[in-house]
Length: 156
Image (cartoon, rainbow, N blue to C red):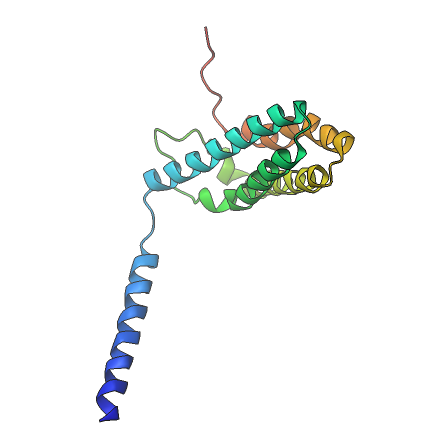
C-alpha cells in the first residue's frame, strides 16, 4: 500500500517542479520590464523627497528608512535593464548597454551612498547625514540620469 503514495508524492513533486520552471522561465516582455523599473524609480523619487523633507526637521529615523529603500532598490537596478528593454515609454538611452560597466558602477554607487546615509541617519548623526544628502542627488541619482536617461521635456 505504500507504493501508490510514494508514486503519487513523486508525481506531485515533479508536477510542482515543472510548474515552477515553466512560470519562472517565461521572460518578461520589454513593456513589463519598463513598467517594473519605472515603478522602482518612482519609489526612489518618493523616498528621496521624504529624505529631503525629513532631513529639514531632523527626523533621522524616517531619513534612514527611506535611504534603506533607495539602497535596496539600487541593488536591483541592473537587473531591470536587460538588453532589448527599450520601448516608446522607456526613458533609457542606448548608452546603458554600450557602457554597461559604467552603468552598473553608478547603480552600485547609489546603493553604497544610500546605505551610508541609512547608517548615519539611523545613528542620529545630523551633520554626517546632511553631508551625504547634500551630494546624494547629484552624485548618485544624477550620475546615472545624466548619461543614461532621456531628459524630461522642459517645462515652459
